[in-house]
Image 1 (cartoon, rainbow, N blue to C red):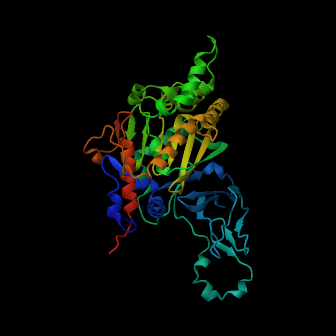
Image 2 (cartoon, helix red, strand yellow):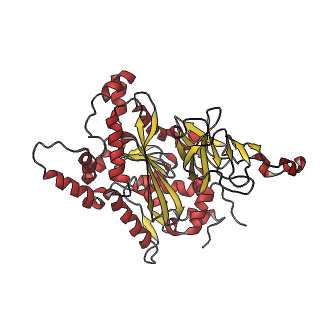
Image 3 (cartoon, rainbow, N blue to C red):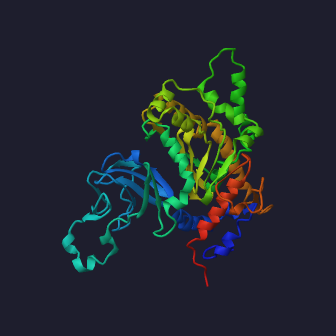
Length: 440
């Protein structure tokens, strides 16, 4: 079957309690995701602290489109396609750097202002002015026009027309607000570097996993479970290491995860950990609550810190952990390949011990060397291989399904409900077909 220009066939892949295996293995669907899904949604680009000074740039991808985030001379943050309009050469090949006052193509030295406008080109007399102004290249680097700076988190929508930023994210932005407000100064900075980890699986498997609360005590028994058993053998009175504090909650029983709850927002967004989470019982950091109280008042400080959300999924492809200040991006490479980036943030004005905890969590749980991360990776790769078989065609997401839930918005449910997974797949079908023209 071909899915191109066939929105009804795509919608049929998502049933109320099942999704077709083609979502994970079909290359044509993957290409259509890049063309439609990642263009119709608001996708995370980066954080403004990564480009603090005019001329600073950071390169990344939106779907499979190469873009760069740059601090313009007017101090605003722009997003440009990383392509010279002359011969198509990528203007910037480094992950980050400073362009100075302009970008210069390494092939023919065409140069562009920081906002992408054409600045100069060699031997300009060789171009007839009237002819050249009609050329697309005269417009300079292509700009992503729909860019939103939300409290220094930069998002963009590639399609010129579509849902507004505010309508797309709605109440889910409260997770970003909470993570930012955990700083006594209400400000975050990217710190601690980034961990990049290639996964031989479809990107949606990782998104699905973020609200899967029935797997930790099973899949992570060999890693987190072993860490807990070793700790239990320590002499009485031994201070509990930070690493054990972070490993141990993964082994919580089903009842713990049921009780912590899941919030399901519109458009594929949602979070685990409504009333409790694996991040709720970390040791207090001396001086932190006092700094928060001085900044916000005791009541407000307590409300901020008592909100201990576990995993917040921002559809289509990022996950945020506010209480531990991490953000993961699931970058699609192919139908069976995903690059995962795990970023950590410093709470400006907070004790350094909090950044130490954040970086340790990222290293223990999300790194290529993480024993916990390899538990998940093995499951993803087994699933990627298993889905190719002819034995079954559908993936089940039926746990605690209630007829009519599709029309209910922004609700809290049992922490082991697969409603959030169903929410993501329904959003997938909607944004995949929003701008698709049906063949005649």
